[in-house]
Length: 594
Image 1 (tube, rainbow, N blue to C red):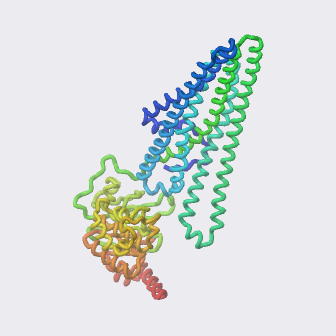
Image 2 (cartoon, rainbow, N blue to C red):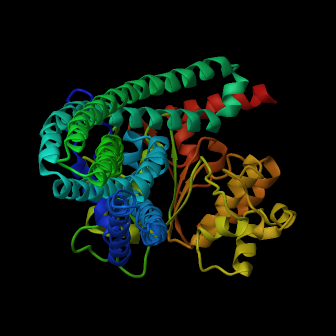
């Protein structure tokens, strides 16, 4: 499921997208109840101020100058109640905002971890990261502030109107006539504002994606002197966001101006008639004072609702973008009744007439009518030019993708009929592009076997020729590796990855040129360790340097997604085919380098 907005179709997004937020917030009913009670008490306490003001004027100032002290004591009580209720409301709704966002982030991340790698080819991880930060921040503000303000103003508005009717039904009825005129621009402009809000959030995501991409490739940017171009590209993304934000701000400003102008204009007109009533003696001074205060509260409440509506629309757009990630279904999943893999594991892997195209390249077959059977404890080397489909074999063996035709079997069980987790538990892989997490050396090694003891970690490090530099780290295995293993050299990172695979103790090894980043001495030591490891395991080696695969039981030569040659090194050289040509090219390159 792609999560990018469809630019060709007009957006039809409604506040119903916030149901997802409510689903998470409703998990905490006690907090919601306390917040609702505190909100109601605060709103009623606010409305009690004009009521008490009316009583004070009519009984204290107007009717013979009576004692006003009791009225002021009541005022103090109302203020204290308002302060306490507001504090409780603020704490509860702020807690709900933070807790709801935390739950949404956890839910989205758990679902993302279920999705197949193909999802992240069609949806940029940097954009997804922006959704997890910028969009959740909008939702946190909405739950923690906007919704509370909206409910408070709604209660005050409705309660104020009821009180206004008790003061002067005639004046209140005249004021309410203008409400439909006020609501109309909210509806009309609100629809446009909703679409612009979603576009604004998309532009913010673009900024985050551009920033992550540029910072991640800073060495390449500077090495090729592209700082100016990348700065211009970032500026373009920022300016696109600013242009969209200006449209959103303009719409909100116009909507707010129209609504507040109409609302306060109506209040002013009604007060004019009220003042005439006081002069004529038909209503008291306290009544008109209370009407003015309450009318101002009602006007302010409904005026604030226009801004709240704009915030809710932004939150609806953010919720929709997160909901898309939350409900995305994995294309690679375990069947309802997965077939168990046989015991003991042998590491047998079979490709049977496999056809495969990557989702992002549907017109370019990566494998075409590909068949290969790897026997237990056999070492098979896969060689061929770039783009021949070598790495695709590993992607399919791990079941990161499913082929469009044909079948792949592990220990005799079709991968599509087994649980992907069970499949991957029998495989250890060393990729060509080493991944080192921003964690300690211990945690990076334990990724192969989280239950491994320190002794086992050091044994694996020793076998991978990584012990020496790991012991020299400032805090040993507790040393933080930095972002992407920044504290290690390329060769050291590769050796950590090999040690991680050693700890896996899997029956099937997938090695994507596992010694490519090592110097000659380290390569020999690691190669010895790998040969000892491969002795009793099925191993598939993708080799870019042919010198590393001469001892393989079988060499499979691939070109354009097919097997074009197969055999031992000497036989393939004698056949004078693609393998022999690749060998001559590498031999000439080695001579030139020498």
